[in-house]
Image (tube, rainbow, N blue to C red; front, side):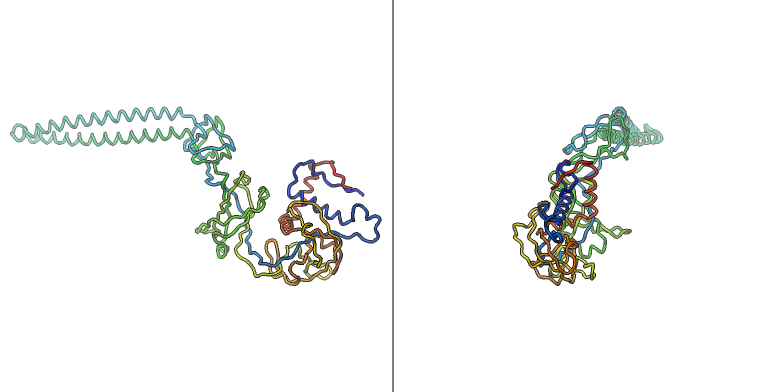
Length: 443
């Protein structure tokens, strides 16, 4: 007997979804018998199921949120002047240091304006000196006229005329000083504008979102680059006013991203903004993370679970262990009193290797669900450390049955629960489409 499966091996390294799909297919393939010998065995084949050991503990209370990744000190770079791009010095992904040049704009017009401002400054200096010289001359004349007036040799009208000219000369000096200050400010302004033709990095970081090419005209509304420090990131999440009653800074969080090789990333909730949006009545919270290798990129969406407490203690099983008996509609679990060699328990959360026990008896037990969490449920009705079926309940049927058991660890079951059934099938169909007619024959 031969079965055909999609040839994932030609694609290269399996993704987590692909490995799980292969594992599930292989598990259910075992339901038809051992090593192709079922054709010679009378009676129905004994099914194979996955089972995990129930445990006693508290059910964590979590709030699931969607987060957006941002780089530390992430900043968008805009020009402060309008000009044509003359040279671009960096590309996407280039590391830069604070002060490194990123781009140069055409500066011909700004140099001409700088020359004009410098010339105007020199003229203002000359005008001030001229006004001061004229004032000194008139002051000397005023002193002579005052002396002559005391001797009766100058009329009051002549004295008044000289005094008026002195006042006007003082005003001319003040005006010249003001013009000099204005010219100096213009020079500084033109110098600053000229320096803005070289756009430099304000931080140590990495370049991204390059939107600058030689010859293009840029204005103050043109985003040129995005800079940020990728080795440290933060995840931004939105909290409603209701969530603020139980979510606080410092609480443990778990961050899940399909792009992270680290799997679940644990971190503390770093900070919560005390100001709520007056319309949406929500606020932002941030989680600081180390990002070795830059595996999480700014702009990515991630799933964030905030742990804010625990329920009362109870027998805990994975959510996938709950099964509604189709005959009676009762919710329960399939359990066995058999014990399994711990060496058979699946060690890796992504290892699809098959380790099946000898057939054991399973019994359907009705349970009372006390609480449900994100990944597990607290129940009453079974004993601690009993093995509970988490995959393949529909193969048992009825109130009791026999099955071969693939004992697995909790981490494996949680991985399966993270991936929705639709995602598994989509992954399988996608690989079938990309591999064409290539098949893998499994005897």
